[in-house]
View 1 (cartoon, rainbow, N blue to C red):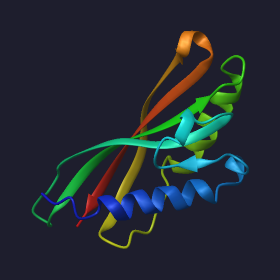
View 2 (view 1 turned 120 degrees about the vertical axis):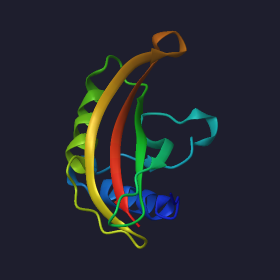
View 3 (view 1 turned 90 degrees about the horizontal axis):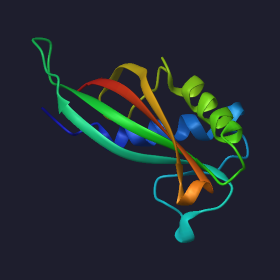
View 4 (view 1 turned 180 degrees about the horizontal axis):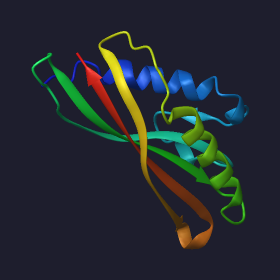
Length: 132
């Protein structure tokens, strides 16, 4: 197993989201903004990588969590942005600087209220398979 493609995958995901028309004007971060952030934004979150080598060579499976966080009333603003994130990444053919993306698929979403209901958070989980 190799973790060699992790940084390349993150950079490609960040670039894809940043250039996606449906996310125009929505800030995208790879670390929580100081003060917790305000408005509606996308946060690249935790990742888990697992061995996925086979006879053809080394590989890894990455489970990525991309979060949409919003202080807007109700879930509509957060869900609208979450749909755009899903559209941007599901089945995307990203070019990596290290390795090759074999597939990128949506797996699940969890929506919840935080801070006594004043903030909404939707965590979208994606599975990325890399050949290295």
